[in-house]
Length: 80
Image (cartoon, rainbow, N blue to C red; front, side):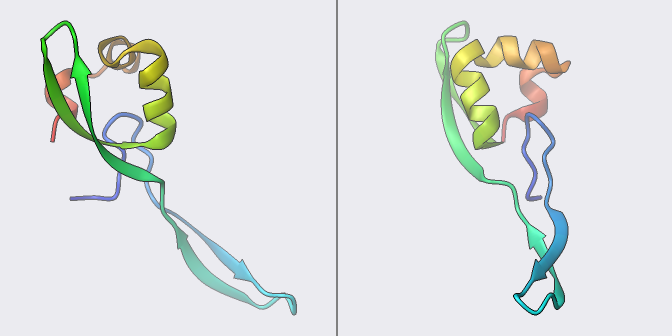
């Protein structure tokens, strides 16, 4: 399973650790991914999705199906 948000597509980014002496060492910045069970009232059931916490906040505000509609996705695209 990739470390990628199923809803927004957020992936790990690369950057540098920069010490006090300004030495640079490569590092990976992973998105804050959580596996969540979201209740979909339109379907009357729960779905399990691996999503970033930013996407979770938006889903809590808009609802899952409205969020997917705005992103141009279907439920089959994101259910794990």
